[in-house]
Image (cartoon, rainbow, N blue to C red):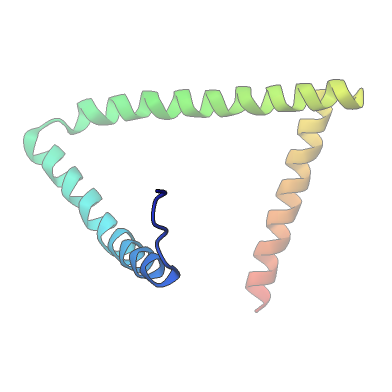
Length: 105
């Protein structure tokens, strides 16, 4: 026999409960973690590691974006650096237009 499928109502109840728990109590958990780090004296050691992880993540994202634009540029026969520049300029114009709309309302 196969697995029983869970109905829609139990799924919604679980999703709502998890959404409330995660949404409301996650900041308290993070705060408690930082309080524990401070109390144990490991704050600067852990923040030093987190800083290195942050830099690696940013570098990996830039490499990933470069690879995506290189593949797209090779397919479209365009320069990937010009494509990245054009996309970045478009993104900044878009975000500026959003911020001016928020200020007007």
